[in-house]
Length: 238
Image: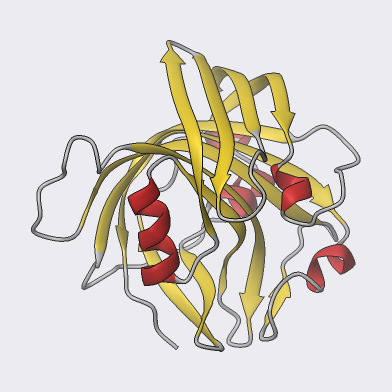
């Protein structure tokens, strides 16, 4: 199994916990995605195939350094649609097509402070033992109604040889890319390796891929789940 080195964020600008996360991934031709990422980034592939991920989860303990978490503002659902890229310096990371957040303040802060394509959505996460449900209905900006409803049954933890190179490629990501004032920028993300589990998809009703301009996937997704990790996010750099 390939292991990506975890960066150290010396001066974090935000602390998060990404909890009860499900990773849904579909294969896509790399040429389909290359036109959807900015100049300076190339789409990464695994065994010749690019991948698009949809990751619903619960954002928790969101706060700047030295500031206590606020019970309502610091906890909300989120769902990301993303692919995996590499910049001209050979650094791997994530390119987001969309990020839906269940708090308007979080969506506004993500757009203004991180130049990321955040949307405000009506969202919920329900955890009942190994059964996890996510619901999302987009509100603003743009055309409302894009949805992302997911139900999974979380199964055995992936350890040793069960945690293969594909699982590592899809989940071991420690850098975000965006475009700030016309320039490509990157932010480091520090967290422990994901404690990954197998997961069985029990229900999926989503239009988020279509809303992002992606064609419909041609096959069922690869599914993983994790109870979560604590995260330190660094400032953008060029």
